[in-house]
Image 1: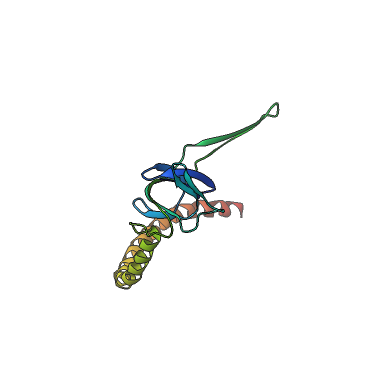
Image 2: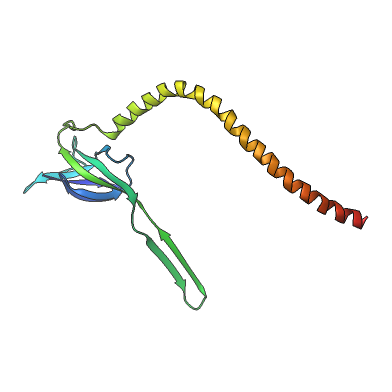
Length: 173
């Protein structure tokens, strides 16, 4: 079975276990993302086309890697003007492995990344209450040491600089 999906402004023909590079998608390595814009799906000669998308069809994919594409160089030169410009650009991309092509509102066998984020947010809200108390005690101790070092460093150059500035003023008067 295959499906034609749209993501990042591009269309891809995918099947189960295909690995492809697409425009950046939010998620970490190992997360499952759902791609809801399925333009067509089918098997062999039996193809169903959407208008513009197939209702209830979803493609689930696992994030394999997050990275950047190769550098694309944009070079402009204006002849006889002694003018040229060279710029490079690296696009962010996500490598995904297609897990399933689901039709007619079927549920995925793995949970999507959006559900994992809500669990992480709930855990983060419960944890800060316990984590804030020790953090407040540590911060003043860390700040006190750099201030002492900074004041020592500030005094040394100030003592050396003051006589040099005072001497020229005394001579001019």
